[in-house]
Amino acid sequence: MDPRTVKPWFTGLQQRIVERLETFDGQAFRSDGWERPGGGGGLTRVIEDGHFFERGGVNFSHVMGDGMPASATAHRPELAGRRFEAMGVSLVLHPRNPYCPTVHMNVRCFVALAEGKTPVWWFGGGMDLTPYYPFEEDVRHFHGACKAAVLPWGGEAEYARLRDWCDRYFFLKHRNEPRGVGGLFFDDHGADGKTDFDTAFGLTKAVGDAFLDAYLPIVERRRDMPYGERERDFQAYRRGRYVEFNLVFDRGTLFGLQSGGRTESILMSMPPIVKWRYDWHPEPGSPEAALYDVYLKPRAWA
Image (tube, rainbow, N blue to C red; front, side):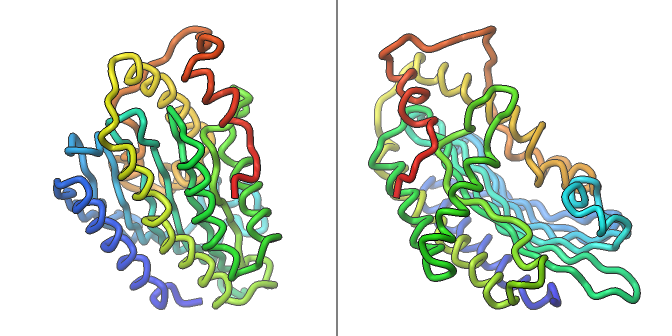
């Protein structure tokens, strides 16, 4: 696989998403191009203190290096020491309104190279929703869009596999709870040689192209809902779970930091206002308790 054949789609996806989000928010995203000393670079598009988004970023990166980072070889020790080339688009959006969920989407490709050996390539990606005050209509809509994206590339069985993988991946083991209400996740797609390039890239494109229709209708419905200090306080508390997952478990964050990526771009996923409380639990029967009792329990929403 030649990464140059997929780069135009990744850069085009970033541009299309940013244009739609700028229209929705009413404020332009900042553009910040960067180069990586070890090879490659990227373009960070970020918004802070927008009219709707409190913080968010849509990043494109294309990096290469002489040695695979530990996060990339933990599940593939046979690739240790190979040169690599990685490319992808990653976004995280943190709305100000607590009734509007945080969202994450990532699509990526990776090639591991070694002299005299066949290159090993794969694709990965997915998207997941992290609400604070969920609405069943919104959760079902998001999962329905995820399902529609996957069905042409493997049917119901493949959708169920990627949905369940997402539930397992975005799980805080030290808290014994999911980060949010799930979505899709896949990795190593094509690495075993059983999936051809067009199929692996096709699924990846389907997921990336489905993002806007999965997310924007939700925040369009909820953006003008009134809220107060109580809702903002709970949002900040739950955002703490987001920080914990990204810094402890997230492969993309760990890969970026271990491979010498641009720290500002990698950590743009962090929410701007976060709180932690000691051994806090929501009041039974409260709207906050509904998140735990109803929604943070993986199920087939679509």
